[in-house]
Image (cartoon, rainbow, N blue to C red; front, side, top):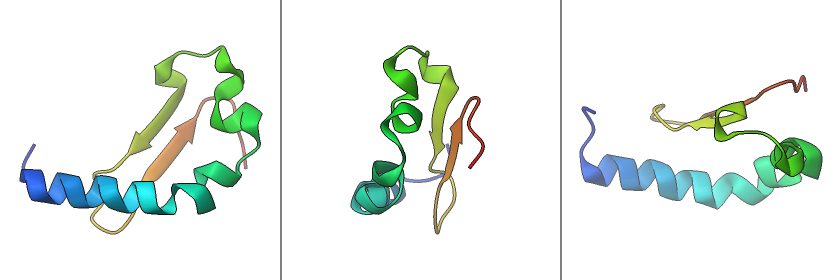
Length: 61
């Protein structure tokens, strides 16, 4: 990608810091996708400089 390692580390650190208040608060069946889905059914996009996008297949919040 275009970002240097430092930018990637900062985005990952920000995601880890907010996880308990975001994805960590989702119902377990959504956060873990029931433990039956493939990785492609849950996706976190950390490309955004001030946040992230979460996709969970079949979930409408």
